[in-house]
Amino acid sequence: MNHRPLRFGIAGLGTVSNTALPELRDHPNVTIAAAADVRPEARERFTALYGGEAYASVEDLCASPNIDAVYVLTPNHWHATHATMAAEHGKQVVVTKPIAVTLEDCDTMIAAAERNGVRLMAGTTPAFTPVVMEMANIVASGELGRLLFLNTWWQTDWLYLPRMPDELDVSKGGGVVFRQAPHQIDIVRSIGGGMVRSVRARASRGDPGRPVEGGFMAFLEFEGGAVATMTYSGYAHLDSTELTFGTDAQGMPRSPQKHLQTRRRSRGFGGDAEESAYKDSVRFAGTREGEWGGERPTKAHEFYGLTIVSCERGDIRQIPKGLAIYGDDARREIELPVKGSEREAELDCLYEAWSQDRPLPMHDGRWGKATLEVCLAILESTRESGEVPLRYQVPHRAGH
Image (cartoon, rainbow, N blue to C red; front, side, top):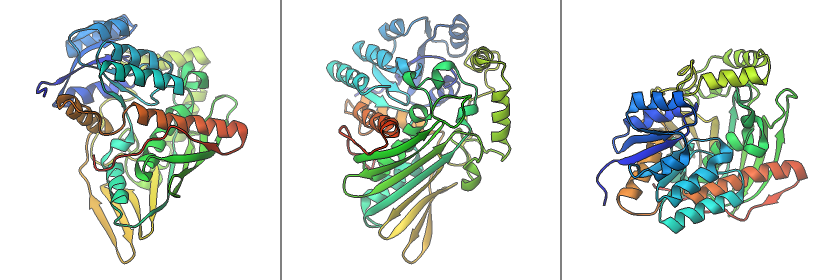
C-alpha cells in the first residue's frame, strides 16, 4: 500500500485549470508536483504559485520521475495522444470529458493503460456528485421497484461563451454533443445501470453564426426496458437553474438576465481573432485570469439541469440540499453532504485504488468509451434519421 500523497502533473493550463488547480491543491491525498503548457507565462505563474516543475511539452512532463499521475486538461483532440503518453511512462491517468473523440482513440488509450498496469479514469463527471450517486444507489437497491424511465433537461449559455475555434469544430471534439452531452450521459447511464441498448436523437445547429451543434434531444433505451430522454440547449435563452433553485454546474447562482447578457457579449466580438484573444486572456496566467472559472462555493449541490427518475413505486428528483423522493404514500427528503465538486470524489476514488493497488471501481477507460459511444450515436442518428444500436456499453457498479 502507498501511504504518501498521489503526485499529479497537470497537462494543459487552460481555463479548466483555473478550477482544477485549487481543487487538487486542497485535496488531502493529492499534491500538485508539475505542469506542462506551451506558454512561458503560464509555466512561470504555475511555478510561482505551486512551486512545482514546469515543462513546455506534455511528453517531458510524463517523463518526470517526480509525478505519479497525469491530469489531462488539454484540448479534446489531444486527449488520446497525451493520455497514451502518460500511460506509456507508467503514470496513472485522469482525462477530462470527453475521454477522446473517436472509439479507436479510446482503444489505444485503454490498451496503453492495461499494457503498463496503470489506471485510466474518465473524469470530470457529475456521476461522482453525491446526488447522482445516491440516485443510482436507490435505483439499484430496488426499494422503489423497477426503473421505468428517467428524464434530464439542461438549458445553458454554452454556445455563446467565448470560444476558441477548436471548441466549435466538431472534427476536434467541439460543440455541445462532445463537450456537454457526456455530463448528461454519465448521469443517465449511472442511474440506469450503464447498459444503453440504442440511441435515437436529433442535434441542432440553430445559429448560422455558430456553425456547430448547440443543442440536442436524445432517446435512450436500456437493456432491461428502461428508457431515458436527454435534452440540452446551449442557446442562452431559458436558464434551467431558474427551475431548480440551486446552483449551476460551476456552483454559482444565476440571474434570469445572465443568458441574454452572455449572448450579446459573444455577438459583440469583432471576429474570431478577437473572441479567441478574449478566451486566451481568461486562461491560467492570462490578463483576465479568474474572470471565468476559479474556486467554487459549496453552499448547495451543483445542478446539471433537472433530472427526474421514475420507478414503479416512486419518483426521485434533486433539490438544493439533496434528494426528494415521492413514494406511493408520502414525500420524503434525503439531505446529503455538499462537497467541493465532482472532482473531489473522483480524486478520492483514484487515490483509494492507487494506494491499495486495486482496479478503479467505476469510471475507467471502458466507461469513458461507452459514454463517448452515446455521443457519437447522437451525431450518427442526427445524420441518418434513425435508431443507432450500441456495442461497447459497460455496467455501472452502484454503491461506490
